[in-house]
Image (cartoon, rainbow, N blue to C red; front, side):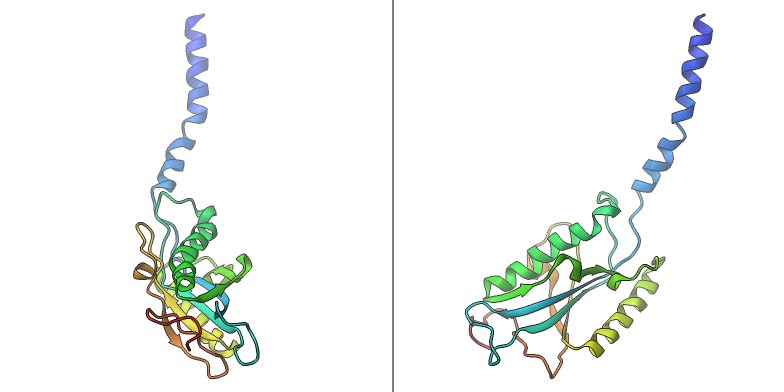
Length: 181
């Protein structure tokens, strides 16, 4: 009787056991390379938006990064949104520049549904996205996406990489006072 019970329990354990190693092995590997594109509307905090001070259409595009193993893939967009708010939006606001965006304007790989298998492929897609954005209009800023300890713009390092002549530019550099251009 004890032998049958032991064999039965052992068989049940074997049924569940094969799924465990493959799940933990997947969790230990970093995610696929990706980049982020955020379409924003930018204006000065202390100035009413008008024809004299229109909103600036600004795009932010990140470097190519991978999620650390301890961050699940399904939280990718949420994690990046929190990072963007803390390291780009909040520091700009502290200097009087409001960077507004909606969740659906923050896109992983520019909204592409193509799986990215290598850093080189992600870089190529990122460069194509920059070229496409130039045609759509707006100023383009790069920013560094770095997981771990972050210190605002010291970590994200936003930098103008393309200036559209049709757009105002409310540069958000240190030392700019609200109301200045």
